[in-house]
Structures are given as C-alpha cells and as structure tokens.
Length: 292
Ligand SMILES: Cc1ncc(COP(=O)(O)O)c(C=O)c1O
Image (cartoon, rainbow, N blue to C red):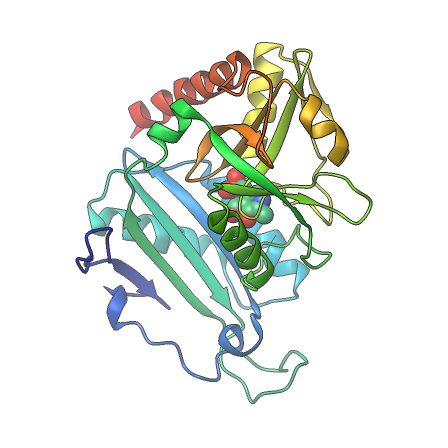
C-alpha cells in the first residue's frame, strides 16, 4: 500500500523467480517466521544504480557467516538483485533482501539440512525526508534493550520496533539508544553522530553497534574533507552539550536532530556541519547517478 492506500504492484524475486510481491507466500515452518532466524539488507537505488552495493553484500556475507547460515551464494544474490532493478524499471528505489534459514521441523538448534529462503523485493522511493532535513527532527532517549550482537543485521527486530514505536508515540523520528553503562550507541534504525567543537563523534562499530553503510560513507567524507572524526562513545549526560547531532541511514541519508527529550541541541536548528556533510553526500550521489 502507498500512503493513499492504493495497492502498489511491487516486484519481488522469491528464490530466483521474479513475481509480484503480493503473490509471495512464506511457509509457516520457515525459521525466519518461527525464530527470526534470518538476516537482511536494505539498499538504496539512485538513478537505477544500487548505492554502495559491494559494501551491502559484504555486510550480508558477514551477517550470514555470523549465524552460520550456509548455502547462500552472494554472487547469485547480486545477479538477482540487479535483474530485479532492471525488470522493475525503477530509478529511485529501495531494495530489501531477506534471507532466512528456510523450512525445517521446529527445533531451536540449526537444522542439519536446510535450504535458505531468499526474498528480494523492490519498492519505489520518494524522498519523504526532504522537509525534515530542512527543519531537523526530534529524538528521544531509550534504554538499549536489544541483544548483544547488533553487528549482525538480523531480521529479529522486535526491540528496534518497540523503540521506534516509542519514538513515534512521542512525536520523534528516532530514539537515541543508551546502553547499560550510560553511553549512546545508535538509533533503532540509524547510526547516530554528535558534533562538538568542529569534530564528529561517533560510537565505534562493535557487537553493540551496527557497521552502517551510510556511517561508512560519513567516515569517508570526513577523511576526504578534513573534518575531524573521533570514534568515541558519548555519555548520555553529554548529549545536551553537543553542538549538533545527526542520524544516518540508507533511506534517511543524513538528518539533523535538533531536539533530544524536548531539549534543544545547539541552536535548536540544523547546524552548519550537518548541512555540509549532507551536501558532500549529495555530491557523491551525483557521481553515482551519472555513472548509471
Ligand atoms: C540499528 C541500525 N543502525 C544503523 C543503521 C543504518 O545502517 P545503513 O546506513 O547501512 O542503512 C540501521 C539500518 O537499518 C540500523 O538498523
């Protein structure tokens, strides 16, 4: 459904067969359904070109290896994904690639024999964040209630869903997860950065913090433009003293956070460094789109 409630004819690749997404049915004994035994990727397509595809595929391979999921050929996933973009004819889109351990009798341990189910689907993307990028967004802190392997892009996202819903109920775009030691980790579906005295501060990727692809792009921008970037953890009480905050994610790109827990960050408006970083990001996208 789109925002007007009209059914969109989304296209999917289900185990190698291209078909309308609404015709894909997942078996009841699929381990992704029963246990959340699956991993996924979300990839942005600009000008019919998937952005940082190799990075996404590398992360997918790492996630698969982390949960010992075998029988998935990344090269084949890539071929299917590119064919789906072509078949869809979409220029600006989001691709979801969901891989589960497939169907097996219901026991917790991994089955000896299994064939993963691989679903790739594509949907049109129109930049719903354009306005928010101008105004900045609100965020709210939330205890980091997730498991301890947030480096794995796992489909079991209920803790993230709980936190994202809490943000929404409080008129916020995102949560700022705070770990048990009182440090900011990331958002429910984005990486979080602070800016203090001209330097970007970001939590290092670890078992608790996903190695975001957009985050990697920000790290490269910082390096190439000479903006100092420090990989460090920010304490909850230091959040309000930051000059700027921003979130980064595949659909979001880069968005200023101008309020946390109803308290203004910096001037309470999108700051100059976030604007500059997003401009740099857009410049890179321009080259991606030209290549397509
Ligand atoms: C917890 C979390 N952190 C960060 C991100 C941003 O990652 P990426 O930039 O690869 O989209 C996501 C994306 O879904 C996420 O779920």
